[in-house]
View 1 (cartoon, helix red, strand yellow):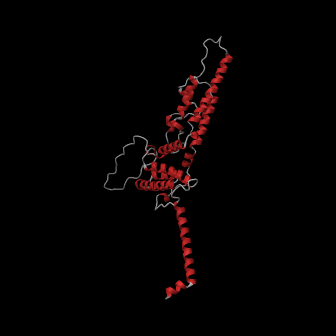
View 2 (spheres, one colour):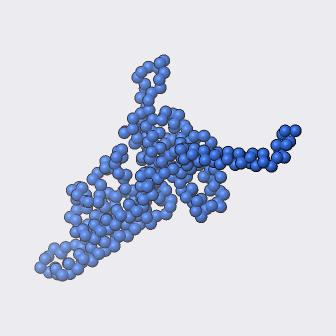
View 3 (tube, one colour):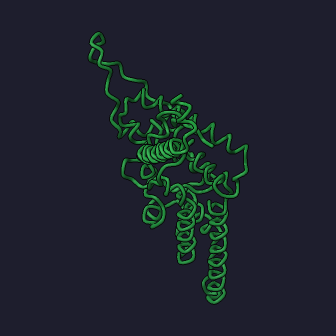
Length: 306
């Protein structure tokens, strides 16, 4: 009889609804606090490394503008293959070793169509040398005004050729596929173990008494590392960021890419759990999480996307 009276009492029903509303509100507040502590499971904060990937094309355009300006103000070189002129160039890198990565070095400039900056400048110097107008053998019959006009026309044609080459190999004029290819290559050069083994400390050895203290050294890698979990995590993070930006704007009703985003997020979660378990939270894990802005929500617990 008491329970039946409580169900029929409007005052008791109002109190029950009020308690339920307060509990749901408190649960929503706690859920928001947990999400703020763990982070966003899809995209994280923008780090300097991600910002540098987004501004690859703009840095490319600035460099090629300097090349075109240097071509317009340069005088005719004496020989195209002189090592002193290439080393004194303000635009060309000093040598091949300057492109090697170190923990604090700036990333190597990458042009479109897999062209190296030193190759571009060497080709421009060689083309300037080959197309330079020939000097007459007899200076008595050679007209100085005509020779000066030929040099000016040759310089103008060389400037046009340098500007055309800059437009062709600029990533700012390339398509999205070229930009993504360069970004993936930058991730391989930054997180690949063929580069990180040089400056990151190894993970701590397992604390097993039965094993000897001196562990066998691992075989060195024979090429660029594209299959390590940290490299795959970085590449997946770039794809997830691109898809999330598309779905938050014009692609809100794109169901196929929503499913693709869900698959990529869960694939990255598996790789992050594997890397944390194998690396034991050591240098490789900290390196990729700090560079790519990864949070605990991307690998902890269950990820459910709408």
